[in-house]
Picture 1 (cartoon, one colour):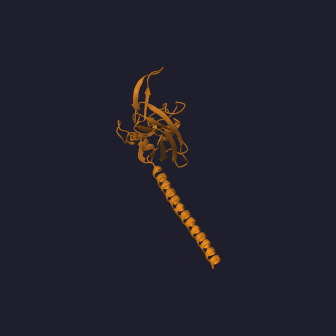
Picture 2 (tube, one colour; picture 1 turned 30 degrees about the horizontal axis):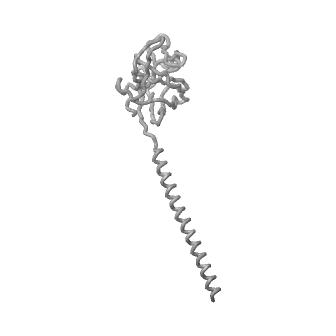
Picture 3 (tube, one colour; picture 1 turned 180 degrees about the vertical axis):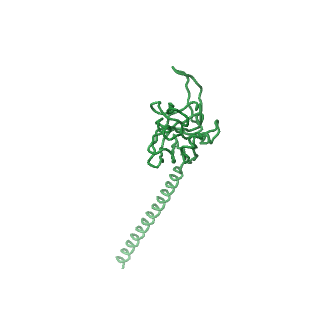
Amino acid sequence: MRLSFTRWVKEFCLVALTLLAFSALVLLGARSADASSLANSLHKAKVQPAAAFIFTMVPASSDIKACLPNAKATVTITVGPLNDTLQLSVSGLAHNAGFALFVIQLPAKPFGISWYQSDMKTDLNGSGSVTARGIFNRETFSLSPGGPTTTFAPTHQYHLGLWFADPQVPFNLGCEPGAPSPIITPFDGDQVAGIQVLNTSNYPKNAGPLSHVA
């Protein structure tokens, strides 16, 4: 009897220890799962989708409206932690043509301080898009504290303008009625461009769309 009772006590203790160890593992796993869930929640909170500001660009003149009646553009600016993403989508423009995008001080002539931002090309239907990264918000500015050309204080640029890269294209489309030859402007990489096709003159001169991006 003594031998059987001792063996029973040992077996009981072994089972009890096994159950205790199992319970500890279950508790540890639950705590680990809770910690993982909390970490995932915190991570998701940190990577919420960035805010976006959407606006349109309009034909730069009545002549553009006449020669390209469906010309339009939509711009989406997505704010990032260090810089912003600008996406320009156009339609109704000349097909298979090149264009140059500028960030400008004034939407129309004389344009003021202008910054060459990107090239863009349209497809067979006159549609196209381009994405650029930079500072496209209320802090966008240029300055010239001194140098061989000119000096000016920090000056904000809150407007956008799009130009024909080839002066011959708008001339052939009849966008320059009365002009004996293509009008040449400096708004392209080689400083030989056509006229402006789209701009943000649908916003006030001193409160262009970029001024609305925080």
